[in-house]
Image 1 (cartoon, rainbow, N blue to C red):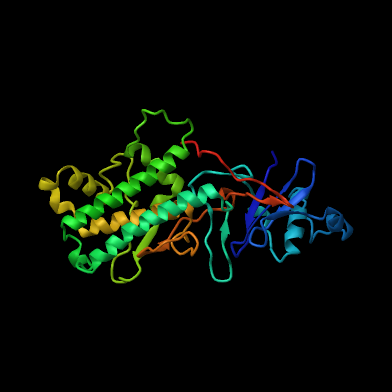
Image 2: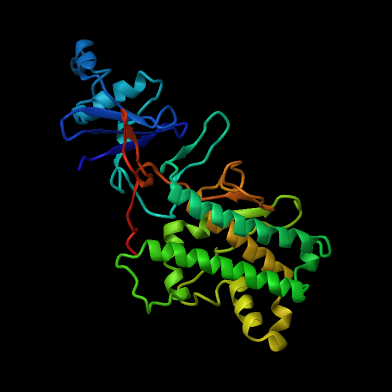
Length: 325
């Protein structure tokens, strides 16, 4: 399998290059096209690049120098010292583990995995479920304003929404975990939070922060910030409250607080974004409504991305491989 080299330029434009098994040098600029194109070695040699110190850096392999020249012809400046080897093999991705570069003004971003019926189906089901939950939260806000003053308000509807949101988070945890286990789970395997917390570094869950879009005075929410392997259930206050009110309504009813409902709903939003990208709630094709807006998220460096290109008229099918939990 070919070694794939990747980079980002100063504008976070992502690119990749490699040499095929047949010895053909190929380049990939996905924000231009998902088709990998051949780099013209004959043209490169014709301009005398190999003997021009401005065009050839002897500290790097010939393929890298050819790539720098080829990408430069497309207006992309490659810093060869920043080039690295792709971690996930070309054409493969970890299911329900998003990698990419979010869109920004003047740049459409990068989605490493091309859409497929399987991805679309699971993503659409998730957004439909989330939209239903979020509608319930917004309805609650008609009666209780989200504010620090009201954070500790509790009630039956808050308890119901907390339970629904947390079971939806658990559903996402289980789905991602089962798709990414090194060895397939046995029928008797029943994952718990000590298993689910293994997803935190993979999905970078602690790095996501959101806000309520229509309530600018409300605090920022990082629903997984304090998730701790020593206390995988108790370290998430909203999840601990969910367990309390689910099993002991009479004794723990006061834990069905608005603040925990909001945090659990934020966790739903984050779980969708961590699996399918930050634009999932704004995509007109697959997205749904959310009262939350992402304020900060993980940055994935070039070699953590997925490279799933097309080669001329032949589609390179995206192949799911488990992360190896």
